Image (cartoon, rainbow, N blue to C red; front, side):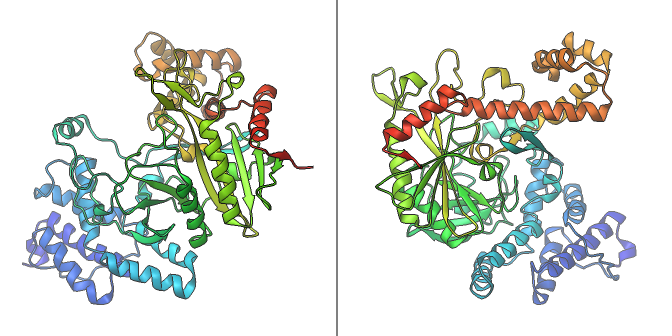
Length: 529
């Protein structure tokens, strides 16, 4: 069948097949010897028996997404996906790109060869580029995130409104609820996700590749997050589906990782609900090549301990309660850090409202104290571990958590403060993009919108009404739109710093900091002269 006897849609799809194969070759997803194979397997998927017959004018596409969208549109026309929704489009997207990648063993072999010949930084560069070029990391979606920096008393805080993770429509959510609990893969972090076709309640992962690595003489894997919140945002996860548990071995693994990948930081969410991460069922860490605001935060008081020579422990100027442990010797640092962690788990200070345990209904002790640990190497090669003290206790006044975003902040954020936000990068819900824009309209003189919101006719602004009144009372409502947007962002940034303060166990007051010092002295630490 010639190009002229096919429909325009068929020709467009065949042209896209040729173009995506050219893209894969140029970006080293495939080799020259793979071109015919890759074309043929895509032709089979889209039900063609012959290729596009004319010359293809490939224009060195920066991103494959526009090409892939053409193929997905055609796939919907011929019934490869039942609905033209983001969820089903993503399932087909991953399948297409999975056909244009090397097998996992080949990717691992190339990573190891590059690491041996050119160093680990060159190997992670290769792997990160592969994850982007294969469309596993959706940079087109990441680019939609709203980002700004906020000047604060603690340095510049990074603010983002997350728009990169696609939302399911109500029908898909209803369908997902009808499906049985997942058996395979057990969760989205399991190694069995590699090459998995996905389903309505689980993303496709044909274009996922993972790299094995050893930490603490245990098998772990390394991959990148598909929704990178910062530069080279990676996930390091246990080979087996084992729950998160924060122990001395956890701290040892973090130090082991920065021995292997010294140009990355690595950290762990806390291991308790409320102060922990969103996935507690599979042990994992997050890392990457990014300098977070917390790393630039200065040390306020420096302490030493006779049992840990060469180790300094510092209270850091930060809204949360941070101890920074520094040493050239990772083993001595580990002993110091673990000692602090183990004592903190048992430590109570009623005067400071810190209770390590409370009784549940059966009279059993419930533990509340834990830490969020973060490790990186300094410019001179030293090891630096931040232990952020956490407590997940609740009471009648704060049923969501005493050291958690308080209710007056929930119109901005009510989710857990996890590892990334602890370090000074706010990840705000996508709903805020539209809501904050409406608030800015009101501050720039849209009285009709303001009246409608007060009357309850703008539901998305209902939770912001008290805040809007505060903003108008303090600043007025005669700004230009650009000025209003900047004001709203600044106010949200200030609120995020307040939220971090809510999550801080020892408050940034004279009394709170005295209690913080009291904890260090309780452990035998002395202020450095």
